[in-house]
Each structure stands twice: as structure tokens, then as C-alpha cells.
Length: 289
Image 1 (cartoon, helix red, strand yellow):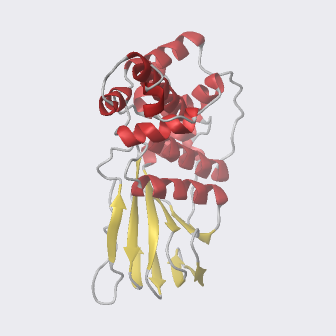
Image 2: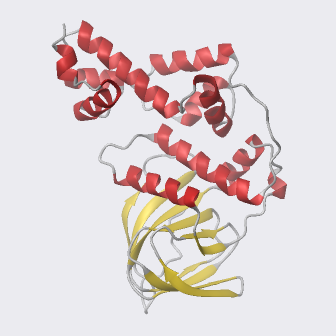
């Protein structure tokens, strides 16, 4: 993934600073960054990834130029710009603001298209500037929260958001072939759930679990929910809570050790998840013994 190196910093050009970024989190096929910007001009020169920018800062007057088309309007929080790979454009902002910048790799878009029974050669994403899309906004705010969280949900959750974003873009620009499915075969589902329970202490990823199921990540995400009724990241959290409760009741390990063995980031993370699922605190459950 490449950072927005095309943004210039001098001679009246836009200045920016990265507030939070995912570049060290090893997300699969995509990256995101929260960027504070000054007023001025920025340029994208024939980008190598599919770029999505969601405004998350103050409203600003913006003039955009892409493929000979010029647009000028008030851009507000939630406004979206889509810049597919191979295109170039220029933006002139009349004041400071902040943006969530997302880069989707061509490989992620192609894999997602194949999993949706869409011929990748028929996919044609075109630039779209300063538009509203409730689904992109929803995913954007979720990614922003993940970047800013002191206790992020991890690669499994983030990869799911990336897959959902790629799938949503494809649904808007390519015809779909309906697929009838009832979920993962029983034996493959059992292999996946056994793997989850055996590796709860690890930072499980969507790619890792999809490999166990012998399907692609985007297909696995859909099939798993069809099979068990909840998204895979929710299943993992519930499994960790169940494991933690069992240890709290049956052992005298310190709460911090229980949290680590159950796969939580720390003791407070475990406490929040346990309380959300059971309505009780780990200390209360420990005292039941």
C-alpha cells in the first residue's frame, strides 16, 4: 500500500499530517489513514490502488478536477470521493479539514469480484466526487473508530470491513450472478470452529480462518455467517468470553492472565466484553466459586 505521496507540502500546496494509520497493522489488501489537511491544492497522479476518501472534519468549499470534469461545492462530513486506479485528479480546498483515506488493492477487488461471481474483466470503477453513500459512510466511521481505538478489535474485524467495502463498490458497478448457498459444509465448519477454540490466545485473521475452510476470505465471511448466524468476529469474541468465564470459575489465575489466555488485549478489554455478553463483571464471576 502506498501513502498519499502525491500530496505536496510547499508553494501553496496542501499540507497534511497523519493522525492515525493502519500501515503497521498488516490489514489484508487495504490500508487506511486519518489525515489532517490544510487548505490548498492536492493532486493524485495515476494512482496504483483504488482510493476512497471520506471527509471526517470541518465543512469546506472544494473545487475538484478529474478527467476534464470540474466540480465546486461545499463538502461536509461524510462526503465521499472515489478515485479508481489509473486515474488522476486535483483538489483545491479553501480551508483545513480532516479525511479518512482508504486504499484498496487491485488484488482485493479482483478476489472479491471472483467470489461474487463477477468477471473481474467486466469491472469498471469510474471516478466519483463529493457524493453521499450511506454504506461507505457507515464502513468509514467504523474504520475511523478502529484506527482511533486504544484497544482495536484486530485484523479479523478490520479485514471484514475491507471485504465489505470492496463488495459494496462492486455491487454498484458490476452485474451480479445470484449464488444459492447454505453455508460451509459441516466438516469444514467444524474444522474452523475447532481452530478458533484452539487458538483463542492468538490474533486470528480472516485470511487464516479462510485457509482453514479452504475458501477465499470474502466468501468465507459470507458462508460462516450463513452457517452460524453471526459474523465471524462476533463468534470469536463470544468464544473468548466463554473461555474466560470457564477459567474464572474453575481456576485461581489472576484476571490479567485469564485475559491474555482468552485472547483479549488486556484485563479491561476482557471486562468490557464479559459485561456486554453476560451483564456481569469478571470479579463477580470469580466470586461465585
